[in-house]
Image (tube, rainbow, N blue to C red; front, top):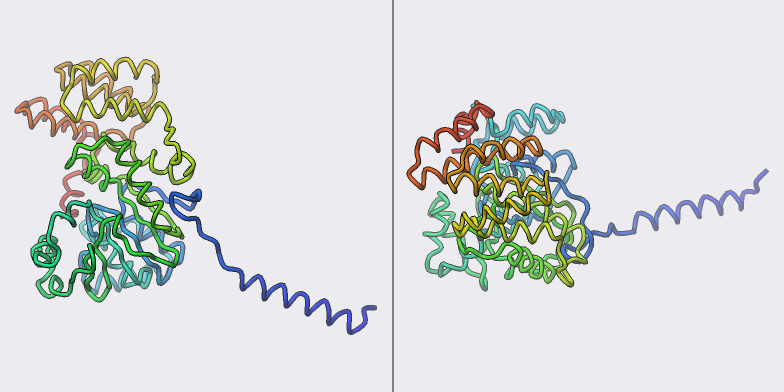
Length: 380
């Protein structure tokens, strides 16, 4: 039978162990320095809200790298419904109430507002496409800038210049608008929200080489010492904000976050270089060169969807639409999520004045997505 002092020693040791364990701080990976694995990938970024609900996050700092603010107002009666569904953990009902129905409770344009009202986020750093911040004299044109996002004069007047950033208050939440370069130091772990349309927009506006853009982004991110609680990434192709020709950037960005060692010498996979070269030719409208390039490279990577995508686009815009349609069929067998190629080609042919061909491609898309117009209506 154990003596009292032995029992006492055992209990005391257990208490000390428990106390020390509770004092240990959770260690968070630093973006672009440590491998980040706590990642959620979605198509539309309104799904971020559901992920944060399920994780039970509270009082988090949000770093939102996105072309859009996603913080539009939602009426209080909808917030009450969201809170009730959240309390009851009715995840399926919450998911079915976003984006696609006439009774949508939240959407891609406003999902951060309920995140704030639910107490998930307490502070908001927004990093839009850099030139949208730096192309303005922040102090003199803040009203015009904020007004262009449909906020009131009162909200615009709350913003003031702090260095190369703007800080203000929208609906009671402190928001800092900044470039990645000028992002202030953040000492606590963050939710990092990353929308691929940010990169798509930079490429479209500046014509920058996509691999150079990714490299520069991560070299800047490395300096920020951001401790990542959760990383959420959205393709945003279905909403049309990210062009289908840039969808693959998501895969490359995730790889860099999971394998930051690639950033040291920038030895990227050969496939990345092929994509970079081929889609660069398409962006420059060099279709004959693009067709020759993708025809060769897609033979080497027979089922690689991005190379099949490039081949289909260059075939169609070189006037070989029957071959393009056959290639699209192979592409969608490889990855059905690339069916946005139809709307890409619809827009491209419209720009060329080829309305009949544009209609054919759009008809194919509508066959696959008969609710398209209803969905777009709810995005307004």
